[in-house]
Amino acid sequence: MKKLFSLSLLLAAALLASCAGNNQVGVLTKPTPATTNLPGHDYPMVNPDLSVVFRVDFPDAKAVAVNVGGKNYDFVKGEDGIWEVTSEPLVPGFHYYMLNVDGQRVADPNTQQFFGSFYWGSGIEIPEAGVDYYLEKKVPHGEIRIEKFHSELTGADRPYYIYLPPQYASEPERRFPVLYLHHGAGEDETGWAVQGMMGNIMDNLIASGECVPMIIVCEHAVATLAGEEQGGRFNLFNFDAFEKVVVEETVPYIDATYRTLTDRDHRAICGLSLGGFQSYTIGLDHPELFGWIGGFSGSGRGPGDRRDSEMYPTSINDQYHLLYISIGTDEPNGMYQGIYDLHCALDSLGVNHVYYESPGTGHEWLTWRRSLHMFAPMLFQE
Image 1: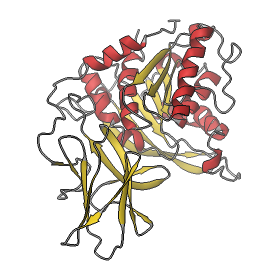
Image 2 (image 1 turned 120 degrees about the vertical axis):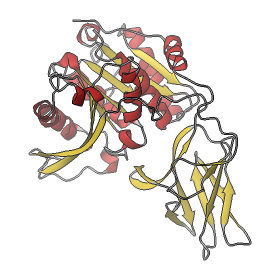
Image 3 (image 1 turned 180 degrees about the vertical axis):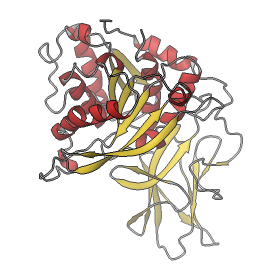
Image 4 (image 1 turned 60 degrees about the vertical axis):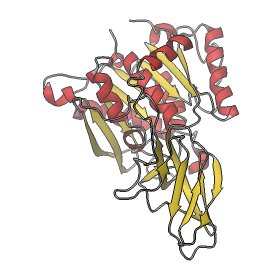
Protein backbone atom coordinates (compact mmCIF):
# COMPACT_ATOMS: atom_id res chain seq x y z
CA MET A 1 0.00 0.00 0.00
CA LYS A 2 1.19 3.47 -0.80
CA LYS A 3 2.24 5.23 2.43
CA LEU A 4 0.68 8.42 3.70
CA PHE A 5 2.80 11.45 2.79
CA SER A 6 3.62 14.77 4.40
CA LEU A 7 3.72 18.26 2.91
CA SER A 8 5.14 21.34 4.57
CA LEU A 9 3.19 24.55 5.11
CA LEU A 10 5.59 26.45 2.85
CA LEU A 11 5.05 24.04 -0.03
CA ALA A 12 1.30 24.16 0.54
CA ALA A 13 1.33 27.95 0.37
CA ALA A 14 3.42 27.81 -2.80
CA LEU A 15 0.91 25.46 -4.41
CA LEU A 16 -1.93 27.86 -3.60
CA ALA A 17 -0.02 30.87 -4.89
CA SER A 18 0.86 29.11 -8.14
CA CYS A 19 -2.85 28.84 -8.93
CA ALA A 20 -3.53 32.58 -8.58
CA GLY A 21 -3.90 33.05 -12.33
CA ASN A 22 -4.45 36.39 -14.03
CA ASN A 23 -3.86 39.17 -11.49
CA GLN A 24 -6.67 41.25 -13.02
CA VAL A 25 -9.32 38.72 -12.00
CA GLY A 26 -11.47 40.05 -9.19
CA VAL A 27 -10.05 43.58 -9.33
CA LEU A 28 -12.76 46.25 -9.09
CA THR A 29 -12.16 49.66 -10.65
CA LYS A 30 -15.57 51.10 -9.74
CA PRO A 31 -18.50 50.31 -7.42
CA THR A 32 -19.99 47.05 -8.67
CA PRO A 33 -23.18 45.15 -7.74
CA ALA A 34 -22.37 41.99 -5.81
CA THR A 35 -22.61 38.78 -7.82
CA THR A 36 -24.90 37.39 -5.10
CA ASN A 37 -27.55 40.07 -5.72
CA LEU A 38 -30.91 39.13 -7.17
CA PRO A 39 -31.24 39.96 -10.89
CA GLY A 40 -31.86 43.66 -11.47
CA HIS A 41 -30.74 44.73 -7.99
CA ASP A 42 -27.75 47.09 -7.75
CA TYR A 43 -27.28 46.81 -4.00
CA PRO A 44 -25.35 45.65 -2.08
CA MET A 45 -22.62 47.47 -4.04
CA VAL A 46 -18.98 46.42 -3.60
CA ASN A 47 -16.46 49.27 -3.76
CA PRO A 48 -12.90 48.94 -5.15
CA ASP A 49 -11.55 48.89 -1.56
CA LEU A 50 -13.96 45.98 -0.83
CA SER A 51 -16.16 48.03 1.48
CA VAL A 52 -19.86 47.44 0.77
CA VAL A 53 -22.74 49.86 0.39
CA PHE A 54 -26.01 48.39 1.65
CA ARG A 55 -29.25 50.12 0.67
CA VAL A 56 -32.74 48.95 1.64
CA ASP A 57 -36.27 50.32 1.50
CA PHE A 58 -38.11 49.98 4.81
CA PRO A 59 -40.16 53.21 4.90
CA ASP A 60 -41.91 52.50 8.19
CA ALA A 61 -38.86 51.24 10.11
CA LYS A 62 -37.45 53.11 13.09
CA ALA A 63 -33.99 51.54 13.02
CA VAL A 64 -32.08 49.31 10.59
CA ALA A 65 -28.70 47.63 11.08
CA VAL A 66 -26.63 44.95 9.37
CA ASN A 67 -24.20 42.41 10.79
CA VAL A 68 -21.54 41.40 8.26
CA GLY A 69 -17.95 40.33 8.64
CA GLY A 70 -18.41 40.06 12.40
CA LYS A 71 -19.39 43.71 12.89
CA ASN A 72 -22.63 45.65 13.24
CA TYR A 73 -23.35 48.75 11.14
CA ASP A 74 -26.26 51.14 11.71
CA PHE A 75 -28.07 52.42 8.62
CA VAL A 76 -28.97 56.09 8.13
CA LYS A 77 -32.32 57.00 6.59
CA GLY A 78 -32.06 59.45 3.68
CA GLU A 79 -34.48 62.15 2.67
CA ASP A 80 -35.85 59.78 0.04
CA GLY A 81 -36.77 57.30 2.80
CA ILE A 82 -34.09 54.79 1.75
CA TRP A 83 -31.78 53.38 4.44
CA GLU A 84 -28.07 53.18 3.61
CA VAL A 85 -24.77 52.27 5.27
CA THR A 86 -21.22 51.52 4.10
CA SER A 87 -19.20 48.79 5.80
CA GLU A 88 -15.48 48.66 6.37
CA PRO A 89 -13.49 46.71 3.72
CA LEU A 90 -14.41 43.02 3.96
CA VAL A 91 -12.18 39.97 3.59
CA PRO A 92 -12.59 38.42 0.12
CA GLY A 93 -14.84 35.42 -0.17
CA PHE A 94 -18.38 34.58 0.85
CA HIS A 95 -20.02 36.10 3.94
CA TYR A 96 -23.38 35.37 5.53
CA TYR A 97 -25.19 38.45 6.83
CA MET A 98 -28.54 39.53 8.21
CA LEU A 99 -30.42 42.79 8.68
CA ASN A 100 -31.95 43.89 11.95
CA VAL A 101 -35.12 45.91 11.39
CA ASP A 102 -36.67 47.28 14.58
CA GLY A 103 -35.27 44.38 16.56
CA GLN A 104 -36.31 41.67 14.10
CA ARG A 105 -33.86 39.59 12.10
CA VAL A 106 -34.66 40.06 8.40
CA ALA A 107 -33.05 38.84 5.18
CA ASP A 108 -31.92 41.48 2.70
CA PRO A 109 -34.64 41.61 0.00
CA ASN A 110 -31.97 42.49 -2.61
CA THR A 111 -29.94 39.30 -2.38
CA GLN A 112 -30.08 35.56 -2.79
CA GLN A 113 -30.60 33.50 0.35
CA PHE A 114 -28.31 30.74 1.62
CA PHE A 115 -28.66 28.15 4.37
CA GLY A 116 -26.12 28.63 7.17
CA SER A 117 -25.99 29.11 10.96
CA PHE A 118 -29.21 27.05 11.22
CA TYR A 119 -31.36 29.40 9.12
CA TRP A 120 -31.85 30.85 5.65
CA GLY A 121 -30.24 34.26 5.36
CA SER A 122 -28.48 36.66 3.06
CA GLY A 123 -25.00 36.24 1.62
CA ILE A 124 -22.51 38.37 -0.26
CA GLU A 125 -19.53 37.44 -2.41
CA ILE A 126 -16.48 39.71 -2.14
CA PRO A 127 -14.12 39.24 -5.12
CA GLU A 128 -10.59 37.98 -4.50
CA ALA A 129 -8.00 39.78 -6.64
CA GLY A 130 -5.96 37.51 -8.88
CA VAL A 131 -7.88 34.34 -8.04
CA ASP A 132 -10.21 32.46 -10.36
CA TYR A 133 -9.99 28.79 -9.35
CA TYR A 134 -13.55 28.86 -7.94
CA LEU A 135 -15.05 30.88 -10.81
CA GLU A 136 -16.80 29.38 -13.81
CA LYS A 137 -14.49 29.02 -16.82
CA LYS A 138 -14.86 27.79 -20.39
CA VAL A 139 -13.95 24.19 -19.57
CA PRO A 140 -15.92 20.93 -19.68
CA HIS A 141 -18.45 20.99 -16.86
CA GLY A 142 -19.47 18.15 -14.63
CA GLU A 143 -23.01 17.68 -13.40
CA ILE A 144 -24.36 18.35 -9.92
CA ARG A 145 -27.49 16.33 -9.22
CA ILE A 146 -29.87 16.79 -6.31
CA GLU A 147 -30.92 13.30 -5.20
CA LYS A 148 -32.21 11.39 -2.19
CA PHE A 149 -32.36 7.82 -0.99
CA HIS A 150 -34.57 6.10 1.56
CA SER A 151 -32.85 5.23 4.82
CA GLU A 152 -34.18 2.25 6.73
CA LEU A 153 -32.08 3.29 9.73
CA THR A 154 -33.73 6.70 10.03
CA GLY A 155 -37.07 5.79 8.47
CA ALA A 156 -36.86 8.81 6.18
CA ASP A 157 -35.53 9.98 2.84
CA ARG A 158 -32.02 11.44 2.97
CA PRO A 159 -31.12 14.26 0.54
CA TYR A 160 -27.69 14.61 -1.03
CA TYR A 161 -25.95 16.56 -3.78
CA ILE A 162 -23.65 14.57 -6.04
CA TYR A 163 -20.98 15.93 -8.38
CA LEU A 164 -20.30 13.77 -11.44
CA PRO A 165 -17.18 14.82 -13.38
CA PRO A 166 -17.38 15.58 -17.12
CA GLN A 167 -15.88 12.15 -17.87
CA TYR A 168 -18.82 10.41 -16.18
CA ALA A 169 -20.93 11.22 -19.25
CA SER A 170 -18.20 11.19 -21.89
CA GLU A 171 -16.65 7.87 -20.79
CA PRO A 172 -19.67 5.65 -20.01
CA GLU A 173 -17.62 2.53 -19.22
CA ARG A 174 -15.31 4.24 -16.75
CA ARG A 175 -15.55 3.93 -12.97
CA PHE A 176 -14.51 6.71 -10.62
CA PRO A 177 -13.16 7.22 -7.08
CA VAL A 178 -15.45 8.91 -4.56
CA LEU A 179 -14.98 11.74 -2.08
CA TYR A 180 -17.59 12.05 0.69
CA LEU A 181 -17.56 15.78 1.49
CA HIS A 182 -19.44 17.04 4.56
CA HIS A 183 -20.81 20.45 5.49
CA GLY A 184 -20.48 22.22 8.83
CA ALA A 185 -22.81 22.71 11.78
CA GLY A 186 -25.87 24.77 10.94
CA GLU A 187 -25.45 24.14 7.21
CA ASP A 188 -26.80 21.41 4.97
CA GLU A 189 -26.11 19.46 1.81
CA THR A 190 -26.49 22.60 -0.34
CA GLY A 191 -23.43 24.31 1.17
CA TRP A 192 -20.57 22.89 -0.85
CA ALA A 193 -22.40 23.17 -4.17
CA VAL A 194 -23.61 26.76 -3.59
CA GLN A 195 -21.46 28.71 -1.11
CA GLY A 196 -18.44 26.46 -1.64
CA MET A 197 -18.53 26.59 -5.47
CA MET A 198 -17.45 22.94 -5.47
CA GLY A 199 -18.49 22.36 -9.09
CA ASN A 200 -16.35 25.19 -10.46
CA ILE A 201 -13.35 24.18 -8.34
CA MET A 202 -13.51 20.58 -9.52
CA ASP A 203 -14.25 21.40 -13.17
CA ASN A 204 -11.24 23.72 -13.31
CA LEU A 205 -8.88 21.31 -11.54
CA ILE A 206 -9.90 18.40 -13.74
CA ALA A 207 -9.65 20.47 -16.94
CA SER A 208 -6.12 21.59 -16.05
CA GLY A 209 -5.03 18.03 -15.38
CA GLU A 210 -4.25 18.77 -11.73
CA CYS A 211 -6.89 16.47 -10.32
CA VAL A 212 -8.12 12.93 -10.88
CA PRO A 213 -11.76 12.97 -12.06
CA MET A 214 -13.88 11.90 -9.10
CA ILE A 215 -17.43 11.67 -7.83
CA ILE A 216 -18.23 13.86 -4.82
CA VAL A 217 -21.13 13.11 -2.46
CA CYS A 218 -22.47 15.87 -0.20
CA GLU A 219 -24.97 14.27 2.14
CA HIS A 220 -27.12 15.94 4.78
CA ALA A 221 -24.71 15.25 7.65
CA VAL A 222 -27.25 14.90 10.46
CA ALA A 223 -29.12 11.69 11.28
CA THR A 224 -31.57 10.45 13.91
CA LEU A 225 -32.34 6.75 14.07
CA ALA A 226 -35.98 5.76 13.64
CA GLY A 227 -37.87 5.94 16.92
CA GLU A 228 -35.30 8.14 18.66
CA GLU A 229 -35.63 11.83 19.54
CA GLN A 230 -33.58 14.34 17.61
CA GLY A 231 -30.44 15.40 19.44
CA GLY A 232 -30.87 19.08 18.62
CA ARG A 233 -28.29 21.74 17.86
CA PHE A 234 -26.62 21.44 21.28
CA ASN A 235 -25.83 17.74 20.81
CA LEU A 236 -23.96 18.10 17.55
CA PHE A 237 -20.86 16.14 18.51
CA ASN A 238 -22.85 12.98 19.09
CA PHE A 239 -22.89 11.80 15.51
CA ASP A 240 -23.02 8.04 16.18
CA ALA A 241 -26.25 7.77 14.19
CA PHE A 242 -24.77 9.63 11.25
CA GLU A 243 -21.69 7.39 11.29
CA LYS A 244 -23.94 4.33 11.23
CA VAL A 245 -25.89 5.72 8.27
CA VAL A 246 -22.72 6.55 6.31
CA VAL A 247 -21.15 3.14 6.85
CA GLU A 248 -24.20 0.91 6.52
CA GLU A 249 -26.33 2.81 4.01
CA THR A 250 -24.76 5.77 2.21
CA VAL A 251 -21.56 4.15 0.96
CA PRO A 252 -23.29 0.92 -0.17
CA TYR A 253 -26.07 2.93 -1.83
CA ILE A 254 -23.65 5.17 -3.77
CA ASP A 255 -21.60 2.17 -4.89
CA ALA A 256 -24.75 0.39 -6.07
CA THR A 257 -26.19 3.43 -7.86
CA TYR A 258 -23.21 5.07 -9.57
CA ARG A 259 -20.13 3.86 -11.43
CA THR A 260 -17.73 3.95 -8.51
CA LEU A 261 -14.44 2.26 -7.70
CA THR A 262 -15.51 0.39 -4.60
CA ASP A 263 -12.26 -0.25 -2.70
CA ARG A 264 -11.00 1.91 0.18
CA ASP A 265 -8.00 3.11 -1.85
CA HIS A 266 -10.48 4.93 -4.10
CA ARG A 267 -12.68 6.33 -1.33
CA ALA A 268 -12.00 9.53 0.67
CA ILE A 269 -13.86 11.34 3.43
CA CYS A 270 -13.54 15.00 4.36
CA GLY A 271 -15.52 17.90 5.81
CA LEU A 272 -15.45 21.43 7.14
CA SER A 273 -15.76 22.42 10.81
CA LEU A 274 -18.09 19.83 12.44
CA GLY A 275 -17.88 17.88 9.17
CA GLY A 276 -14.12 17.64 9.72
CA PHE A 277 -14.64 16.04 13.14
CA GLN A 278 -17.17 13.67 11.59
CA SER A 279 -14.80 12.76 8.78
CA TYR A 280 -11.83 12.08 11.07
CA THR A 281 -13.98 9.99 13.41
CA ILE A 282 -15.65 7.95 10.68
CA GLY A 283 -12.51 7.65 8.57
CA LEU A 284 -10.26 6.50 11.42
CA ASP A 285 -12.96 4.17 12.77
CA HIS A 286 -13.30 2.52 9.37
CA PRO A 287 -9.96 2.01 7.61
CA GLU A 288 -11.62 -0.77 5.63
CA LEU A 289 -13.77 1.89 3.88
CA PHE A 290 -11.62 5.03 3.59
CA GLY A 291 -8.01 5.51 2.55
CA TRP A 292 -7.92 9.31 2.56
CA ILE A 293 -9.10 11.70 5.31
CA GLY A 294 -9.37 15.49 5.50
CA GLY A 295 -10.63 18.12 7.94
CA PHE A 296 -10.99 21.82 7.16
CA SER A 297 -11.26 23.97 10.34
CA GLY A 298 -12.19 20.80 12.16
CA SER A 299 -10.51 17.45 12.72
CA GLY A 300 -9.78 14.99 15.48
CA ARG A 301 -11.98 12.22 16.75
CA GLY A 302 -15.00 13.88 18.27
CA PRO A 303 -15.56 15.30 21.77
CA GLY A 304 -12.92 13.16 23.56
CA ASP A 305 -10.28 13.91 20.93
CA ARG A 306 -7.33 12.39 22.75
CA ARG A 307 -4.02 13.10 21.07
CA ASP A 308 -1.86 10.22 22.20
CA SER A 309 -0.23 7.19 20.60
CA GLU A 310 -3.27 5.02 21.31
CA MET A 311 -5.55 7.34 19.37
CA TYR A 312 -2.96 8.11 16.68
CA PRO A 313 -0.49 5.21 16.40
CA THR A 314 2.28 5.40 13.82
CA SER A 315 0.61 2.47 12.04
CA ILE A 316 -1.68 5.15 10.56
CA ASN A 317 1.22 5.99 8.24
CA ASP A 318 0.84 2.58 6.59
CA GLN A 319 -2.95 2.48 6.71
CA TYR A 320 -3.84 5.80 5.08
CA HIS A 321 -2.63 7.57 1.97
CA LEU A 322 -3.35 11.01 3.41
CA LEU A 323 -4.39 12.85 6.56
CA TYR A 324 -5.05 16.52 5.77
CA ILE A 325 -5.69 19.35 8.25
CA SER A 326 -6.32 23.03 7.52
CA ILE A 327 -7.28 26.16 9.43
CA GLY A 328 -7.66 29.88 8.70
CA THR A 329 -5.13 32.17 10.37
CA ASP A 330 -7.92 34.51 11.53
CA GLU A 331 -10.26 31.89 12.97
CA PRO A 332 -11.42 32.22 16.62
CA ASN A 333 -8.47 31.66 18.94
CA GLY A 334 -9.79 28.47 20.49
CA MET A 335 -10.58 26.94 17.12
CA TYR A 336 -7.22 27.89 15.62
CA GLN A 337 -5.29 26.65 18.66
CA GLY A 338 -7.13 23.34 18.71
CA ILE A 339 -6.25 22.53 15.11
CA TYR A 340 -2.69 23.82 15.43
CA ASP A 341 -2.19 21.74 18.59
CA LEU A 342 -3.43 18.62 16.77
CA HIS A 343 -0.91 19.32 14.01
CA CYS A 344 1.87 19.61 16.60
CA ALA A 345 0.71 16.45 18.39
CA LEU A 346 0.72 14.44 15.17
CA ASP A 347 4.21 15.72 14.42
CA SER A 348 5.44 14.65 17.86
CA LEU A 349 3.78 11.24 17.47
CA GLY A 350 5.42 10.70 14.09
CA VAL A 351 2.10 10.60 12.22
CA ASN A 352 2.51 11.94 8.70
CA HIS A 353 -0.03 14.53 7.60
CA VAL A 354 -0.50 17.67 5.52
CA TYR A 355 -1.11 20.89 7.46
CA TYR A 356 -2.19 24.12 5.77
CA GLU A 357 -3.05 27.57 7.09
CA SER A 358 -5.24 29.79 4.91
CA PRO A 359 -3.76 33.29 5.23
CA GLY A 360 -6.06 36.08 6.40
CA THR A 361 -9.29 34.09 6.54
CA GLY A 362 -11.53 33.07 9.42
CA HIS A 363 -14.18 30.38 9.91
CA GLU A 364 -15.62 31.01 6.47
CA TRP A 365 -16.04 29.64 2.99
CA LEU A 366 -12.85 31.10 1.51
CA THR A 367 -10.84 29.03 4.01
CA TRP A 368 -12.72 25.94 2.91
CA ARG A 369 -12.60 26.67 -0.84
CA ARG A 370 -8.83 27.05 -0.58
CA SER A 371 -8.63 23.84 1.41
CA LEU A 372 -10.66 21.82 -1.12
CA HIS A 373 -8.61 23.32 -3.97
CA MET A 374 -5.44 22.00 -2.31
CA PHE A 375 -6.86 18.73 -0.96
CA ALA A 376 -8.59 17.39 -4.09
CA PRO A 377 -5.43 17.20 -6.29
CA MET A 378 -3.72 15.04 -3.65
CA LEU A 379 -6.42 12.37 -3.81
CA PHE A 380 -6.23 9.08 -5.66
CA GLN A 381 -2.78 9.69 -7.09
CA GLU A 382 -0.95 6.48 -8.02
